[in-house]
Image (cartoon, rainbow, N blue to C red; front, side, top):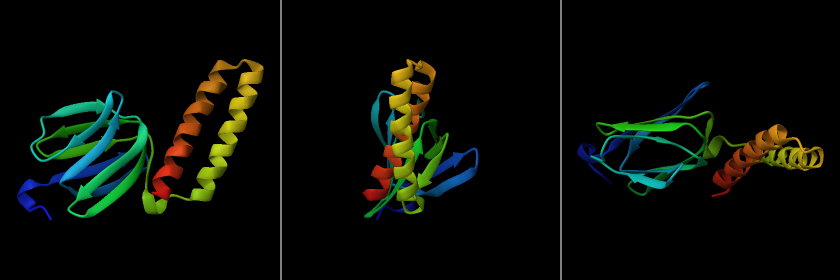
Length: 139
């Protein structure tokens, strides 16, 4: 395990409150330009996040969080993720996520048939979020 001198402080917050707080020797996020790994003394940065899994590793332990958009700010070995929504792996209700996936797929079909671009765009985001939650829960 990494010593306290070479770890990051990681915090994930949403409009509903704090979802995650912990230490990490490797933080892995998916930004709008690709996957990014952050370790101790990484250069400061701000990045937009995709709907994807965030992995917080400390030694052999790894926490997985379904992060649905937002941004990451990293400075002075403190990583703060401000997400639209986020759920820890153990908190995800797979049945609820599967229902959301099915609803989104049905809405996508209806939006295609009605040529409704706005509904289609919203349903595609809902589908990505549901699939992300399902993937994080099952890994």
